[in-house]
Amino acid sequence: MLNFKKITAVILSVIAMGLHCRCPAVYAQSEESAFTHTLINGEVTIIGFSGEPVYLEIPEYIDGYPVTKIRDNAFFNCSSLKQISLPDTITEIGHHTFYGCNSLESIVLPDLLTELGMGAFTNCTSLSAVTLPLTLETLPEACFDNCSALAEIVIPQGISSIGDYCFTDCTALSYVSIGADASHIGRCAFFNCSSLTSIYIPPSVTTIGDMAVGFSDENSSVSAVSDFTVMGIEDSQAEIYAQSNNLPFLHASEAISLAKHSSTPVKRIPLWIIPLLAGSGLGLFALSCIIAVRQVRRDRKSSHENYEKD
Image 1 (tube, rainbow, N blue to C red):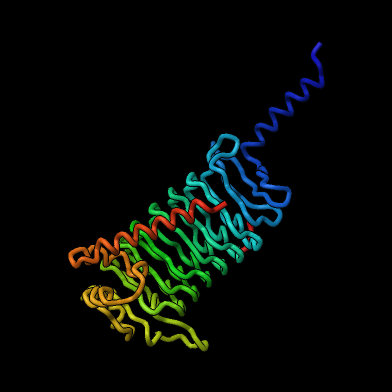
Image 2 (cartoon, one colour):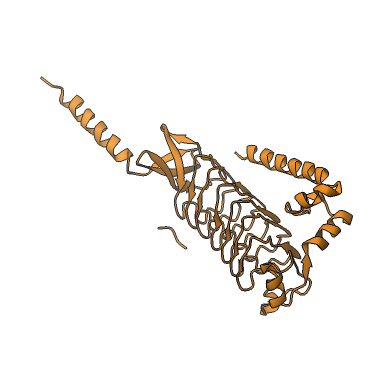
């Protein structure tokens, strides 16, 4: 005669296995902090958090399945979160994922990331360092809006579009490097970046939105920043934008001349200048400095220990 208890246990186990494929689960880092996830079609999506996490490390695999996505709003207003390590298996980060994580200090985005949602880091007011991967094609609308501690950003080659309001109100931002594949800079992309005094816009850029750079709303009045300089090549969209908005424009040749005689640290010289300096004797020196800076960024990456919720 079959044992009723054993049959019941087997049935319950089968049901539990089926539910595991669709229902959220908790992956605990400690009793105080955890994140929740779900398994769909053999891939894990991080969908939220519990408790008040401070340091989180998202693994590459959970129960043998790859972690490939962080859902929309997953860490919305997680004000306790200071550091999060993301695995390179993640290819998608949803909209407003880290919105309002005002204690988050730095982020290294996964090397294979292809999709980053709008407003992903809006109001991350402590975020001072961001490393963007080469795999992204666009920076979406309001992605880093009001990241008021962010001091510099390197937008790598491969990114073709910088969305509207992408870096609005990044008041500490003093250095921006835009990659040579950029073709669009959206409306108010760098609006009210009060520490930014100049920007080089590569000739690949064909459209620049209203008040994209060089504008602020100090004293509640929107106006062009008087001492802001747009840099670029002659007859480029950068020059047209500068002239249309009565902003000073500096030709690339003049910028190179200034770079040769400037005491500004080499890491502050845009990457586009390196090839142009190659024949001047400064190229190798500048390139070695850039390599050193990139090594620092890699070291930084290795030291990392992730509107309303739906």
